[in-house]
Amino acid sequence: MKQPCPCSIPRIRQPAANGGGKIAENDFLGIYRIFIRLLSIPYFVKQTAKLWNTFHKKGNAQAEEIKGRQEALFWVEAYPDLPETYREILSGYLLRCVELAGGQNVRVLAEGENPQRWQWRIYWHA
Image (tube, rainbow, N blue to C red; front, side, top):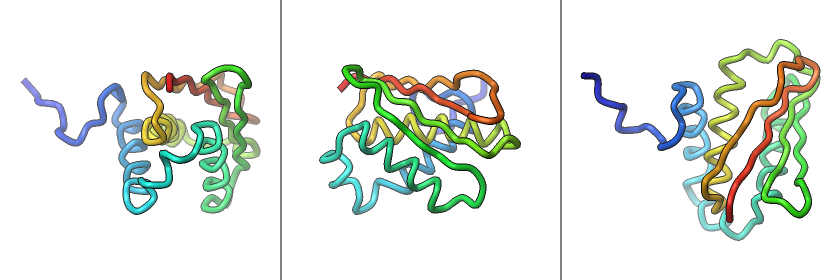
């Protein structure tokens, strides 16, 4: 019987999403760990979109809070050929970012297959 990888992040089953979670940990578990908990989760998700725009040559990422709910939208436009594997990586990255910011029972759902606007809906409990 094959044993699960000891580096797996709980609740992320797909290998690509698991890798995305590890990337988020690498990005934010250093000195930034102290500051992340001081930010609101919606603000942190918006900053994640800004990071995309800083480090990616293609696509434009944006995020918005769903007011009155523990929910946010994250989307990437102008990148119709964004690979499916990378979309899975991004799902894991977003999930782990929200967990690092204090979110619990985090869910990240990819919405639809619109290549003009790849979108994820993020839910959490504070």
